Length: 45
Image 1 (cartoon, rainbow, N blue to C red):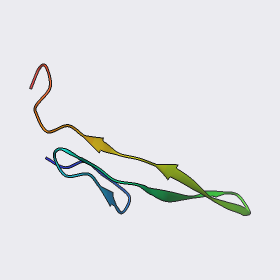
Image 2: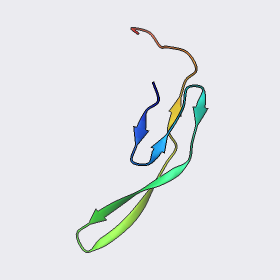
Image 3: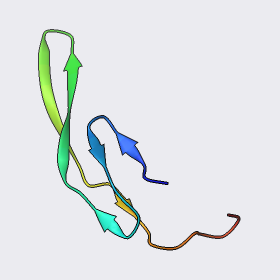
Image 4: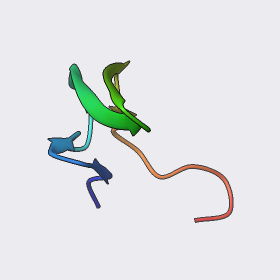
């Protein structure tokens, strides 16, 4: 399973970098994100 945040997607064992646009009323900003996805299942999986 690869988590997806906006257009950012981290495949198993990978990390990716990007930003997510956020509107704050009349102002728009880009929030930097680095999603990380482990190569193995974690506890409770």
